[in-house]
Length: 207
Image 1: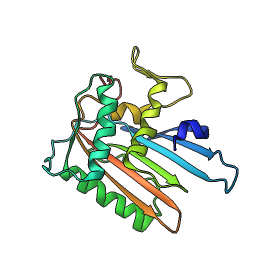
Image 2: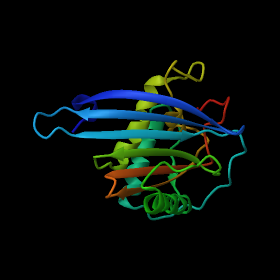
Image 3: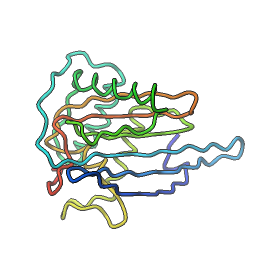
Image 4: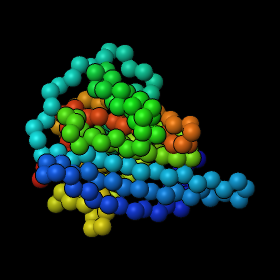
């Protein structure tokens, strides 16, 4: 099912400043499915992490890439190719860190957003309720912010956020690791991707 064609979308954004070193941009999207029988409602929210510190060190890359990892990579690299940016590589080391974080949020926090402002990696998060989210769906939700990004002056359209998109296409980010978890009791899921080196450095253009 094509989400854009079959849904009404309502967007609520807020910009949160934390300490003096980083900024998290949170976008909450309420999507009501068009249906006559058994109307469905699910919520999506996305978070990008911004940086002003130095990039982290490179991580090891695994030779074998699982199916879910390939789906994350393909969706990211299609968006990057569209703006002439080099493809990401899958990092098992980064993915292991992501997996630990997602499991913690599932087991201890009911799939709520993780606090990633102090991490060494760039990060995108997607929270959803009431629907299964595939790796491609998660990345496509982040890439939707492309419409709000002005590359000519490296800014977001007024009253919109575009940080999750710019991290997806950040040229200096070379490695990717992602993980997902589902909280059955809360009917919610959480998707997190880490990027190494991190992107979204304040004042820098993604490409």
